[in-house]
Image (cartoon, rainbow, N blue to C red; front, side, top):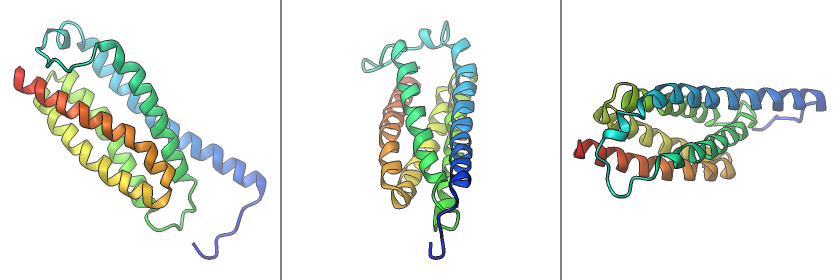
Length: 169
């Protein structure tokens, strides 16, 4: 990071706006693609599945995901604003991109393909990538890393729920 100097105000504002766009667009795209796969398969397929007693009501998923997507986007924005020469920045970005692809893919595997086993495989990979992404984010920006913790917690819960649904059906 030696040799990095602050840029003029106009360039900094431009960079912030671009970073915000690059942070929001993939998250919004994943949310939209996930919704396209999920919504038409809730009834009758998902509602007809056997679920464990700890399965939350369907109405809770949308607000939880809205909050998690907002936290993800802000965490990613913070990483994108780090100087490009910073060690680990590109790897952290790559992990974010991979996890957001897996995030959207889970809805297609579980809901669109109506495959709890497929969902379980995808969410297992997603969990591994999130753990690694969190570790990278914390090294680059402590707050960005902490913003990912609720996402990891929810995906851990979702993986347990996914496993239970697979076993019961």
